[in-house]
Length: 446
Image (cartoon, rainbow, N blue to C red; front, side, top):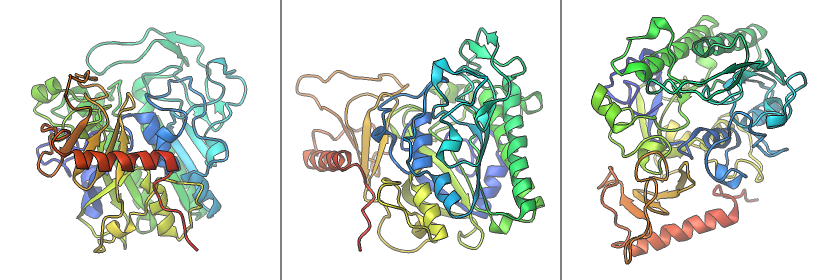
């Protein structure tokens, strides 16, 4: 989902998003939040571990549906931290961090390692995106129905894409989002009845391809199948908010809505539908340019976050772990959440310097970017992702990378790499230190 899809971020959006807009009115929206990667697997790793994914074995790209466990054994995760603090931890939705033994998986046996090995008490979901086989549901470490059938996949029309492969006989693409929402509502209902504190991780696969909205959502936007799928996604968020309200726990519940990367929205889509899914930022999902990783981030926290507030603080999905730890008064050990910063000063609108001295992002092809203030360095040429040119050969005597002043040039069109060598040198040195030291969050003292 792009930063320009919701009305709270884009008053000219072609997609009605009443529930996300409601959350923004009741909480805070961030304008400079980043996903740490411009594609999904690494962003999920970063959110759940508080660590840049390029520090893991995955240096570029994503896992496929038969990928194996990416989170390192024994690594403290966000659900693991909250579980230690007495929370019931549940996940419902797209996992995409490796499940079981990959291609050799025996679906009659437990799929391990999986979410329950990384801090979740309960998990119901799908292995990866809805365009990667095998297409199935799993609950905790067991497959609900084995993928004994086969799908030939789909390539058309635009966005209605999934790969050929194994599928459970009862699995229907268009039913996945409402099925997951039903399960998430059940988690909230059960936890509220028990009176126990809970953490719910609810990563819907929408609006990732395939764009398969239910019939009742078709035609509800002015942005085609993609827009209609965003409308359905917003409606599922609304169903969950309604359950929180019905259980009388809204005042004690923090709600965050965000995305794992920018929208897969090309210039021809923007022209056809007059909709800027990534606002005016350059590029799209997968790119090192801003549209690849600048994302919506809305948080409602009654009593701590002022309704209708806006923060321009620079942040990353890696920061969710330290922020929730700070909210609960939990200490993070030095060997966990190495790239996570506590954003509560921004949430509470306290004056002071930026929380983060810098931020690192990563494209589909592993192209690094580093930001300090308004200066952004891309360590190479091209988008590093979906937008052409993906790569550019260095011309004789030409720049080796890209340097942009986002304050003066938010579209990243004026490459200052050769004109500001001192900035290039400084940012390059900082990135080298961050890579060598294995962390960006300072170690605790005392």
